Length: 323
Image 1 (cartoon, rainbow, N blue to C red):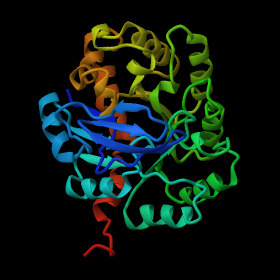
Image 2 (cartoon, helix red, strand yellow; image 1 turned 135 degrees about the vertical axis):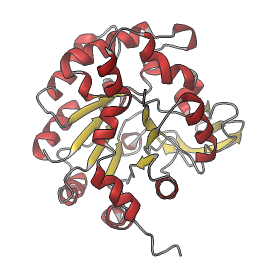
Image 3 (cartoon, rainbow, N blue to C red; image 1 turned 90 degrees about the vertical axis):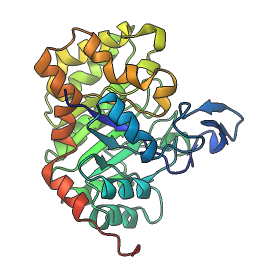
């Protein structure tokens, strides 16, 4: 069965920044925030202070992963240019999203460079209060903020563009499923992917139902299933994750299997559960029939992220700054 990891992070150099300050690597896959919290970001054997494509390619081979979608976030620090170089080296295996702080003075220059010069056809908004922009910016709405709006107005010129959003947990000011629904109506030629199944909790399925029901009528809204294990408190000994099965069953009932994208959020999530577990857990459940499982594990990500015109744009891209 073909597999596409629909939510992966490659890290050329750890450069995280969020509400806890800056992130400094301290070796062995560990790093420390300015407020003193130490976290384990990279599994043993994957890198001391980075996670390069050379480390991931053997993992892909071992786990039977055919392709991967490279996303950005402030946890690791934006790896935009490294993502560009990886996609250029392996255009049939990787596709990438870039990220930008919409409040940067040169935000639009950054956006235009990544789209027009570097060939990106996906953008990632990591806006969560816990790990993203709202940890160090005043709260804003993706569908109402003028700084974000000018980015969307520009991207409207690129049908098939993918907008991936991590808006955090329901108890954070960044949580805004209604904004995704509004944007999807406003930009029907774009696809929207909500990360982490809208931060589910198996004890609060009504809350998850409320968010997903807003997406249900909008065929251009998808959810990825990355990191839901550690979000809902399930570890290695809980495989194949009964709490996650409840939330995915809820998502299937409301959205259908054709709008669910498997992903891992590795490397960080692979420190809580092994990558092998994350790559195989759905196969050990009865949530999907064979056709549905194929769609969730690869077909949906291919249809959304690996659109032929998007892959072609990445292959065609050339950076004149680097000879």
